[in-house]
Length: 335
Ligand SMILES: Nc1nc2c(ncn2[C@@H]2O[C@H](COP(=O)(O)OP(=O)(O)O)[C@@H](O)[C@H]2O)c(=O)[nH]1
Ligand SMILES: [Mg+2]
Ligand SMILES: [Zn+2]
Image (cartoon, rainbow, N blue to C red):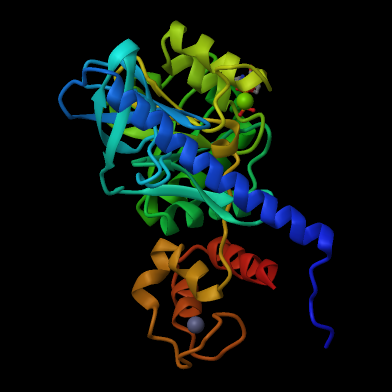
């Protein structure tokens, strides 16, 4: 087999990237040191990262005031939602001292396929579906698996209930009921007619969440319905401008009208599954769990094998056939 050789061009580029990284880290530390030497610093306090701007982060204190903070090279990579210890400095610029452990994190592959954390400490992933565009059950299950594997509680939210008609109402009710039987919380609402939003708002109080789902289901409309006007303006700017001094490179944290925390960015809304093994995928199907280890074959794929506990559970009506079907389709897509 031919040995993989780097061309001189590639090697030069890699060296250059390394040097740039080192220079950046040193610059970060210099900036932080200069600031440290420059003047008075307040006491250490807790804060939350609410946005990320290259070498700086925006931090919110317990009174909802926001400060720019410099990152030091010895503090690990921070993302929106991170809880940190920081000290306020002169001119509303602070410095990050430490990062608290994350209770959850959301990650996705970047353009080169490398897994990147995009947000931390999220309590709920709200999977939005609607009568239009028609939901795809496999897409919903993909989101559910991704949430399960990230250990973030998923919620299924049916939006646009104003569009339900006699002929499709029953189908949607049973779709939602299916997820409820598995043990997921479900909600129904209409962002347009402001139906069901109070219940949703009440749930989100004190929690942090993201919306995910197909384009057109109403995620932006829901955000607009749940955020105060001022937050929406900030959001529009960060969503539309590709350039500019204050352009965020990652997600931002917003407070809903009821003091829930919405972490939002187009990248998060499209976050997808990154799984390589069938067994890992199966872990993402919550109602399969009691049957693991009960199949005749220990490496059962729950497909054609005899005495499969999962298939038996389907036959007995304990697992919906569609869920096993979707599981097998997702497994097939891994290969
Ligand atoms: N009838 C109806 N339309 C809605 C509702 N919520 C959003 N829409 C519409 O659906 C379309 C897509 O909404 P948008 O919020 O941009 O979806 P996103 O792509 O998920 O962000 C827009 O034309 C909205 O006005 C709703 O509750 N009922
Ligand atoms: Mg949108
Ligand atoms: Zn099996």
